[in-house]
Length: 311
Ligand SMILES: NC(=O)c1ccc[n+]([C@@H]2O[C@H](COP(=O)([O-])OP(=O)(O)OC[C@H]3O[C@@H](n4cnc5c(N)ncnc54)[C@H](O)[C@@H]3O)[C@@H](O)[C@H]2O)c1
Image (cartoon, rainbow, N blue to C red):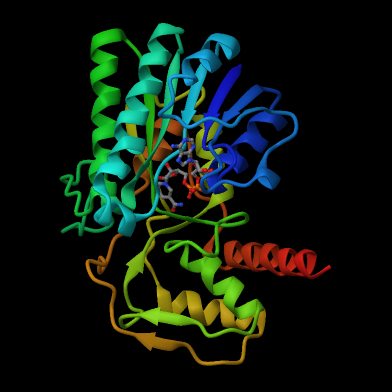
């Protein structure tokens, strides 16, 4: 298949590009490198350094004629979305609409969209949260993901464009940015390997669904052929606390210091994790990497990265 991946220089997108190429697909990438990195780019993918808000994207569709649009480019910083909701919506909503318009014009068969099960349900009343949980976007970032989901449904109704929306938990693993505001595992790995202070905000008992990027990639491979017009949670069904992550990583890395606790961050959710029965039913997906193995793989990636950077 011919696949166009937006955000293909980023953490999740670049891992997906690698898997699509390994499976023999023809892949092109759009990314403006605002957060993505050139070193993540697969040399076998054609790369277009373009902003998804630019009219030039239509030329890429015309040239590449993709069968599938895999849409991972986004403004991903929740706090930035609170401070500058117009910028957030410009990328995540208007930018996405432009991609959908080009998808219709150039007869894309299906769009795979990265939504956020960790954000769009707010603080779910019933856990694990399944796909019928009422949507309760508490931040503009979450509202922009909900809007993206509805535009997909709307463009499906109007033009017959198919989609699979993947509602991820907290994705972690190799290539995650350790300097962003999210990505606690990448931040902890980097701090511990550098023997720096590890900060925990609040009690550390907040629960999240940490899903390994390799499992998320597999969902994106399965969605090429299954799950049409479905919204599907991609999570483990298990809530893990920040304190547990800290303890496991401390042990894996051999870090000696104690964590330093800071006041809770405003607006942070207490508990959220995702039911994954629907992913199994419609995609044949289940998570294969448990938290201990995923943390070991991630810690090893960051250890090697620090060694490379020192050389
Ligand atoms: N990481 C998670 O836990 C998580 C959870 C739920 C959903 N998601 C979604 O998955 C997707 C990928 O997230 P990620 O964690 O890999 O983040 P990331 O920042 O590593 O990847 C996003 C990519 O999009 C690119 N980008 C941003 N704005 C752009 C623009 N205007 N034009 C072109 N490219 C642009 C960035 O340069 C980056 O390479 C996002 O849509 C995000 O909302 C991530």
